[in-house]
Image (tube, rainbow, N blue to C red):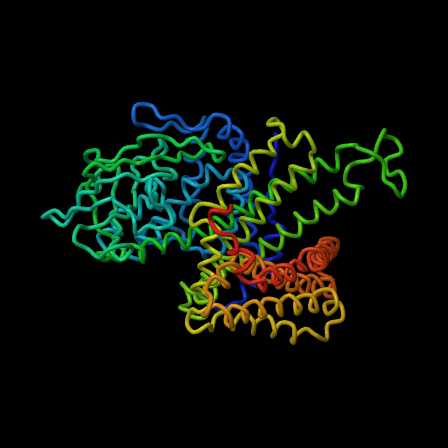
Length: 592
């Protein structure tokens, strides 16, 4: 059975040596000293490896079962959920007034990565609850916050988001679910939603559904969509649970992966709902949840890549296969371990360099969310808004690819279920689709985010890269291996942006046809920037004679691999972008 080792040492390096969290002026960060973060991460790591990881295969093989309207989760899930609840892990960064611990989002992200790597299907139950709670916190009335948030923070009640319908996914303006106003301020919600993660289960006393629906007589399309709180059980004025609401699970979807999570068809039959936020402004409120969820889904791509890599690495060290062409490395055995072979090294380093670069990128994005929310930093808010589709799209595309590479290291055993590698690939695959398919993320990046606020956020990113390069150009160990490749890839990104500016207005397809390549080009530049910053931090630690020198040297060597072998992909993506729309749009639909 696969194992999982929490990457706490690497997280500590990123938090303290690279991002220097305890010395920033973001409210709450002064408490994030090394000892404190180490204690939190170590304890979360124990739960991940000892409680959640052993249940990953159980969830995959047993799945969820619908019995008389109730979904039964896999063996051991409920006990583990109780343990996670009791430890306070479900509300690390929620406000203390609602039962949270008010820790920074960045620490919750690090913990979430470990939980997701250990058991993605399980972690989704609390992850979706956190997103729903965030939407209520941002848009709910004081009464709604007091009614729902304390129980959701503790996960005594869990939460969901209900967007998709059988006939509409991305184009939510086509939805048919209706919300009929009642005389008492409530609404009657009628319709069907599909693909609802954690829609029904047996691990919580109540489930708080956030449901998009249209109020009759409102504007057409997406402008007429409102958001409603629809609890499984009606909550009485004293906070106790009343009658069952008119919402039920009609079916559990049969899926490729994440079998331990109940993905449901939800039927609403005049269910009582309460408006969250303003009428016809449902997407504004839902996007609070979706943007947080997109960061979380990017984390899932990284997490599955990491656990798959860890197991592939162990296999490559243990499995004897062939001899090293440069000379025998295991004279006492019949063959050398797989890891001596250059192509296996390439596959492992592709994975290692992605995982460690992506982790830094994700934690940096989380730091900006803290700067935005806790420090009211508009520049940070704009930057993380720009980077969110890249975090979601690039990290999940690459994360899935890395699970396939890890599976490949095993050869035929990677295709056999008992080794567990196929589950990582199957579980990672959904992350490229839900919370906005990655093609939509790319369109959002090029169509909306680049021009947002007059393009000042993407210009701020370029200035950040240029500033880092200029600040460190006299560092001999960084210039050739890190700064020069970063400068070249950043130029590719600017050229791509210029191509869109020059061609996008007269031929929008020229930009849209290159949007996916642009998302990946941008993602590689972001990881290149992260690797340059990590290399600088590692060099500084070595020069200071502090910490584990071998760890820092390994970090630098891994970064060099990324800059030499992975970052040059930006040139390929630029060439594709500059080919314009013609190669993509030339064929008539009938000619396919």
